[in-house]
Length: 144
Image 1 (cartoon, one colour):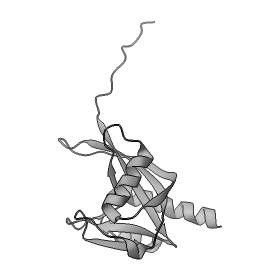
Image 2 (image 1 turned 90 degrees about the vertical axis):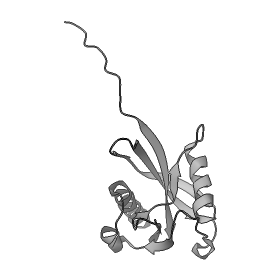
Image 3 (image 1 turned 180 degrees about the horizontal axis):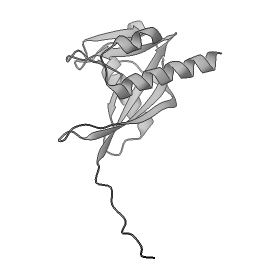
Image 4 (image 1 turned 90 degrees about the horizontal axis):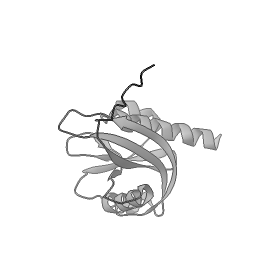
């Protein structure tokens, strides 16, 4: 039997870390200028660890720090070239201060606490919607 040649992966990905910031039974969502809802977070910088990047992003985007909890979602967001595909890693997080202390950066127009039943009505990337649903499922399982 002849060995098959090994194919090298040609698909490139960047890593995006997202925070599922919990406030009671709601999750913090951010409105982008394009009208879509987003989660706090973003791409890792070169050489940066996942939790360090997420802590940095919380400070940059919300002006507050938070404790980084467990990963509740991982997924792939495939995009049309020339945009790069994205591996999304979302952690459940707790703010170390009040939601009232949030100061938005220029990337977002509004902060909103979203309940489980509101998720399907919001315009957002599919992978972020799935991450939020997983966060709610995790919160329900841990409180029950």
